[in-house]
Image (cartoon, rainbow, N blue to C red; front, side, top):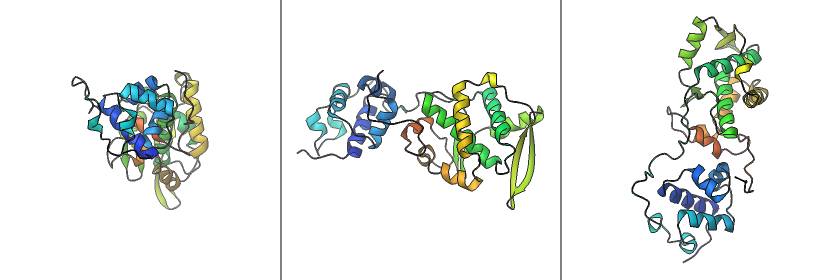
Amino acid sequence: MNMKLSQKQIGQRIAELRKMKGLSQEDLSKNVGISRPSLAQIELGNRSVDILELQRLSIILEFSLDEFMSIDFTINQGPVSDPQKKPDKPEERISVPILKVSKFKNILLYILERCAGKPNVGETVLYKLLYFSDFNYYEMYEEHLTGAKYRKLPYGPVPQNMDTIINQMIEKGQLQRVKTEFHGFPQTRYLPLVKASLTEMKASEKEIIDRVIEQLSDWSAAAISNYSHKDIPWLASKEGEEINYELAFYRDSPFSIRNYGNEIEEQ
C-alpha cells in the first residue's frame, strides 16, 4: 500500500538507510551529487528530494522505490549491511576537533582587541563570540578554526579548558583579568596586553570572525545567551555534554551562513 510520505518521513528513512550502510553524510552526498549541508537538510525534512536524486539514492542505498514509499516499509526490509562495517560508529565525527592552542590564543587576543573596550563584553559575551566564530567557520569551510571543544551549559556554549588557557596567558603577561560590575551585576573582563598576530590568521578566518564581531559584539550577555540557545548545535546537545560541530550543518536561518538551496552542486 502506497501513501504520500512527508518530507520528514522521507528524510528519516534516508538517514536510517545511510547509517545502516555505514556511510557518512559526506560519502553519500558525494555519490548523489549534492552538498553535504543539502543532504543534512533532506534528512531533517527541511528540503525536498526530486525524483532524480531519489533514484540515485535508491541505487546507492540499495532500496526499491516502491517499497521505500510504502506505509509498511521498515529499515530491516532493506539490504543487510556488510558485517565488517560498523554502522553504529558516529558518522558525523568526520573531523574530530583538536585544540590549536596557539591559534585559540591569537583569536582570543584579536577578538579582545576589537571588543575589550565595549562595556558589555565580559566572559559571557566573549565565550559566545568564540563559539559563533568556531561554528560559523566550520559550517562554511568544513574545517576547524581553533579546534576548541564546547560544552552545553545553562548560560550557553562554553569552550573547554578556557580557564587553563586564560591563566597561562595572564602568567605570560598577555592578558589582564578585571573584576567589575555592569548594570549592577558582577562581570569578569579581559584586557589584551599584547597584539594578536594577523600573520597567523588566514583571510577566510578573519572574515568570519569580523562578521561575528560586527553582528553580535554589541549585544548584552542576556541577549547573546538567549540567541545561542536557539542555535541547533546547542539545542540538539545534552546538558553538560560536548557540542558536535557537525550539527552546524543542520542550522536554519538566521544562524546558517550557507545557502541551503535545492541546487545540485558540482563535485
